Length: 366
Picture 1 (tube, rainbow, N blue to C red):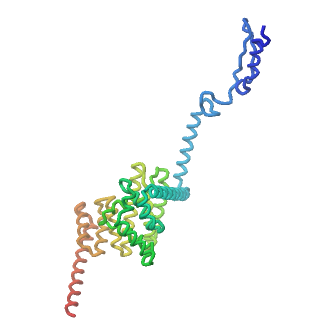
Picture 2: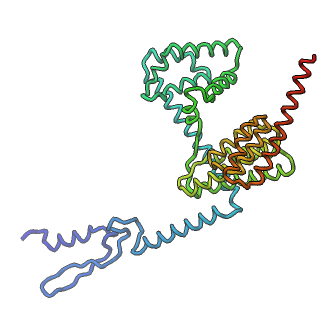
Picture 3: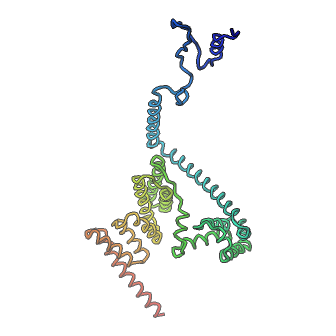
């Protein structure tokens, strides 16, 4: 007979059972021997793989809580008294995003330089100490095939960079003047790289509806302030408000089609208001530029065409003005404003001819 019996073995197993998983045991007699049964004490965690502490039915409660929180957040965003706080938070988030983007660009530029061959690194090294030229060199990495070295070793590019560096070192031009010269060249529509430059310099933040509300509210507030300044003939202040509102609309981009339509409508209002205030300040050329942009959003709008026609009259471009008024009458032959403006245009053309005739007589008489 073994000194360590089967009964002792069962007792030892029971003794070392973890207390958390099995707290108490009962001993029952089933008539044929002795057996052990664990009581149904709940375990401190769900053995089925669920979240710790979760119980039956808790999933529905959590979903209900999430929906309730979403409704409360939406109500908070729509409340007018929270508009300023939301707009401030949105501006901070956009600034953070901008800083992160700049850091990523700097890291990409460093990697592009270090991964280039030795000749390319040697060619661009003298220009990295000057901010504006460093920015130019950083554009080499945007080559369609990712060939940084092709531009870094291009003799014409290096000659241009060398001349700019020399002008800056000898004090003939400041960095700001060099940068302005480059930007002016790239902004020229005749430049082959104009479209690519426009795409690269136009930065937009893609926003969901709840994030877009703050931007739209801020823009509307600026536009309303601009309208007040305009009514008080404070045209410079009105111009600044409208321009800031337009910059917000240019910065944001919607995810949903309905939000995109809302952005388009508000951007159009800013452009129309800028056209009006520029005309009030006698800046007819800039007024035409804003109204040209507005026409891309809303073609063949009689009010827009009449306003641009008046701006063309202010510039002395009578043929272009007549073309705008004629388009309005083609759209609506009974448009009273277009008929009035066409009559004024005829009078202005006659006056201009009389002024030219008088001026020519005085010149030849002298």
